Image 1: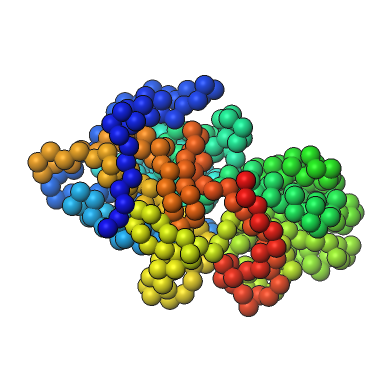
Image 2: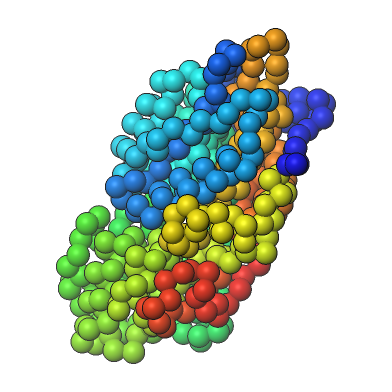
Length: 416
């Protein structure tokens, strides 16, 4: 028997009245948009994911969401229909186009996605303007929510939520580890202009500088670039203690391989982040020796209080169906995001005879009021859509035969 998480009528009205606002933020006026389901209609949620770019993220999200929907079972006697994932290609153009396509179906109640912050920047306003809700398992850019000090970020919109944690937490964890644990004082950085990589580098630079560290060289590459000679020459001339490169697999794999063989960078510590914390990269020889900042990955003992399923049980089901372990830790975030969305739909849906009425703004308000125990830990949404735990690990990967992220050695734990 799953646990139903709901609000009292008075509490839900209060949340709807504020729509999660604080004194410093004001949501746009939006028309009520009620999804009306006939007797034979399933409850439709859709997935806006990375399929052709960062495919491991898309795959674990799809599988995690499907397992959560199955464990939840029917909602008000109706099956849940996820549909095929809509590909964003991890780009703003793909995010916007995918969102517009999904919104062409008036019976869609909510969206799981996106995987990449770049896609969310463009999809979030479209989803918000439609009165819909979107919950991401893996977006982390601070630009999408807030500065964690009560101030709205440039690309924050009220229909957007995420179970993954704001990268400001990751930046603080990494800067403390590098400065106080590794006792390194100079770090060069490289990013590719993406909202994820650029915001994370900026956040790390600020946090590291506040501790007394310095960033002697900051480089930017382009998406798809694999020749890193010019950047590495710049870094070798600067002579940093470490290089922080929070890149995606194509660019990050090339950067790691070339950096390790570049004259003048011998002994330089290489540090990356969650975009490279995937089995595809961990299996390569250039991954060995790198430190990674990223989310917790071992969720076996945690329990999702809505479905009553433990991480161990969900992983067993994952293995039985897909033949192995998830290639990214965000499978658990996808599972929790889906239970949050379906619980919100269940709580606000109104039955009248054979018809089911679901107010999209009421679903959004219910999601905003979420506080529950999930596979990732306690999930509680703030006024800006950040629902994650904030906890981060620093991993040290020394053996390419270990490609299950949950089995990597953890050398530092951050718990805000």
